[in-house]
Image 1: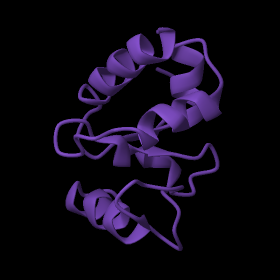
Image 2: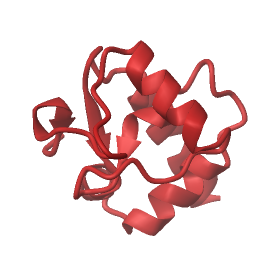
Image 3: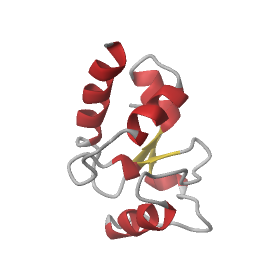
Image 4: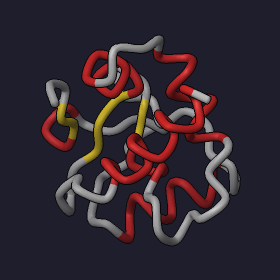
Length: 99
């Protein structure tokens, strides 16, 4: 039950991320007091990719990580949001590390 409630809260929170910015699994985990893998599991279960931009969550080192629709689609969406992807990494200036 808690995971389902946390899922809704986290997915809704993603909608508040500003254009041209991403955050990390770690930052979300710290904000919502959970493990980064739990955050990843929630994002992997996202069925509404258009409403909840889980593509805007990356690893703490800036690497893009996985995506339900595939890595190429994640990169495409990031670039459409004017976020640079260089060698499958996001430059630090695009990453919000403290939420």
